[in-house]
Image (cartoon, rainbow, N blue to C red; front, side):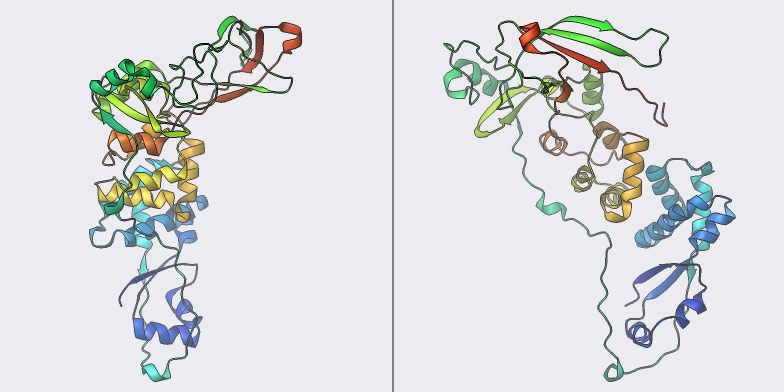
Length: 382
């Protein structure tokens, strides 16, 4: 009883009430909800930017969702964290004020009924944001450890060897230092040619690469692609570790893919440089998982909103327009600080980037060629 119900419509309060069915009016008479109305189209028109109607609707919803802590400055701060300081050239403060003033209460009709007279109506279905319990967070399989465990891997190599590693007598022995978290065979090749094909004044960099595969056992067919495992930039990793409060020299133990009984041990710096995709593009599920670790109510609600169906346009803006990374999201919602073990799991591994092979091994022998174009763009932050 008394729960708020937001109605986004161009109708006035009397029009809304007059268009409700008798059954809904009787339900309202019993449950006595707090009906509120916002004319998002008219509010956006007053701001001289009709495209702001969705943002106005979000603002009205968030004001109600904030409940007892709903204050103008809190709403403005939450909208700023979601949309930035401006939307379509209009300041977020101006949008927040207009949305705040546009929210109207609809007086309930004077309708007295008894429960015996109520006509059954259809059950309401809700698509609101469901709160996730933070008491049942999954326990990460990744764990920090001491240098003693790393030493055991060196001393007792036979017991802790990565699953699937070829024996020394194999012609092309797998180097266990090359992404030990992966089950498939990896190859260390040497780039012998890196030549730009387009003129320097041309706005796109198309370049030719040649890799020497002699002694690696790498074989390929026409039409196949070469998967390249990239590393994160050293300075960016160190800066992230410093901001997150991590010691890059601490040791972390990570399960080996395909064999949970085996683990490989490396430093936190090595993990974030070579394996964890901390500067990659976060999916929607990351926001939901991160919300469970947010200590600030504002950050927690914003993360849940972005991960919900109602937050699809906000997620799209962050993903496609601002092209945020996992690290960007963590800095944007700084009260959400998962332990490093949990962070590695919810972020995931760097995926190989696949390039179509531009050579035939029958013609070039122990060599693989690539034709690559550099893609550059500027996000709103520059």
